[in-house]
Image 1 (spheres, rainbow, N blue to C red):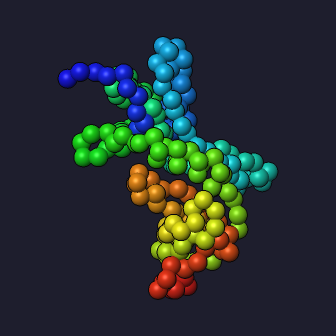
Image 2 (cartoon, rainbow, N blue to C red):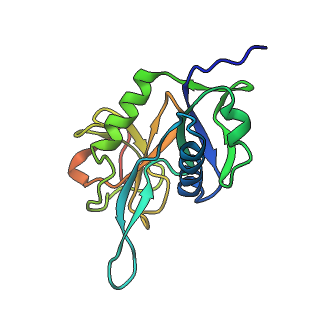
Length: 180
């Protein structure tokens, strides 16, 4: 087997709340050894439930970090703090094509996860997003509205994006009543 220096994008599944730690560690390793790796950890601001309403930076894709590295990166990264596994297709880490990474970056940079008013739907309802960069995506409510979040699946990566959207930005999916 020959090693190549070609760089490709991969999605790494991190330990719980390990995205930022793994990102910092990879960036430090990259700087120290001039490896040429890139990372992408999109975040957004969310209000804390505390009395002072402090804002926290949270990952747009919980437990995922995108990393561009060569074949040697597999050995270098798997033992770092925060690393859990690669997102795989079969038994091999899935390569994310450059055009898909551009789309992911574009959507993330458009601040897709903005904090807005709650949805008036019940757990399990499917809705279609009407506006913004996620227009046309179908989402499913996965909680009892305590977090007031709509979960949208991005099928090409089997990832979920947590979005807070106003009621006016979604419609019930055709054939599904939002109040049942």
